[in-house]
Length: 261
Image (cartoon, rainbow, N blue to C red; front, side, top):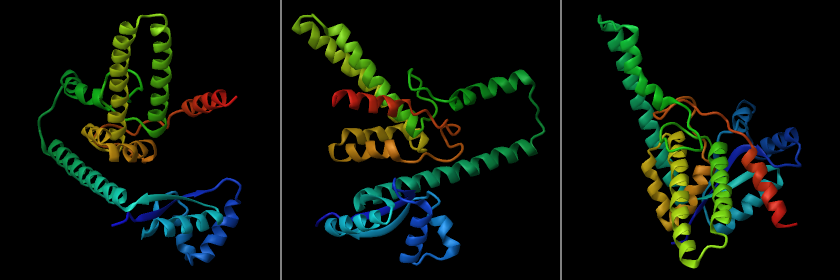
């Protein structure tokens, strides 16, 4: 049975198109009520068509892009997986909400009091887990947003390439093989740590990194880590992380420009 595809619109307008003209034209063509137009272009992912053949999906995608809409194509298999992940996130968030309500209720009803030293001692571990994550280090607590995850991947890749260049120059073949193996292992550990922190931002366990070992799902998992929106506000793994800088994108563009000079 051939794979089916879904067309998804996330509210973005393609460069070179006038935003107001696109909204007006699309609203008329798709018969979007005035009351729903703002929600349609709010940035929330909307599935426009489901279970299309590859040819039909590509044709409709081209037509919508000619109108100025930025459209992404997703296989039905991956869409089902994302829905399952979203369901897990929703269930976890609901469980967390119930736990918080129970804790608040117990604190309200409790007559026991703690002095400042005892309170600080009780909250020390929780504060440690809620601290913002960094792209370097070995700590597995906290969350990384999309830009920070991308910056971390670029940072470690460039760093290890430069390190390998200086360490391996002029060494014997045997020494090069040993050092290359050690550098590859260290690089894998660093990038898997970034993936764990990125899964935390999606309110998912770091054990989902197992998907990166499955050849068919590895590519789609990396796409989800790069483009999947993290949960708003706090989740089970900490507070909402900072937006992150564009330094990784700037560095990547610079490297590509040097390659094609």
